[in-house]
Amino acid sequence: MNHGAATATKPTLRFPAESISATCCNGSRETGARGISMRRVTGIGGIFFKSRDPQALTEWYRVHLGLQPEEWGGVAFRWKDDNPSGHGTTIWNAFPADTTYFAPSAAPFVINYRVADLRALITALKAEGCTIEGEIQESEFGKFGWVIDPEGNKIELWEPPAGQ
Image (cartoon, rainbow, N blue to C red; front, side, top):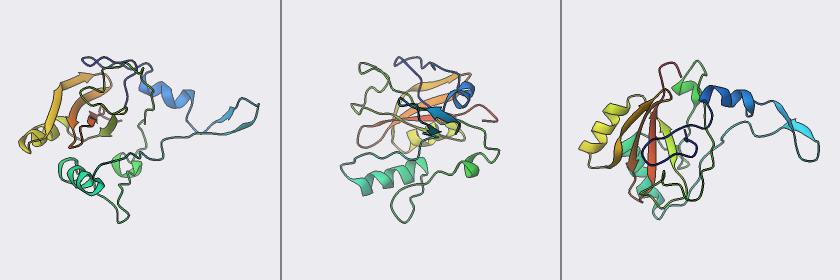
């Protein structure tokens, strides 16, 4: 979940999460620039990024964040496994180039992962020697925490509110 034009200390959303699916990416037909009506983007299909050592980085994510790589090397998140009722939102949001929200990472992205128990995970990550960035923050959108992976990427951990 990205948080709009956020600062490093207090994330804020531009749009309430519950309004996002109703305004765009719910599979409805949209009219493009040339007047062509068709189903367009309906969600995020994957996140792909470069790594200096893909095997080592995948192993770090397996050990510390519990991601389970498939035989082909990547991880498949299935919404029905995480939230069988089908409620939830995946956020896409472009930040201004001068945002400090991604700091201390120099990467031009932050990946947000849904987690079941943020406080327990942060405690475990600290015990495992991982670099935790900042303090847990709570809002009406849930609880947020951050960890830095071995390549210096800031990773956002999000525990959604109950029922989402």
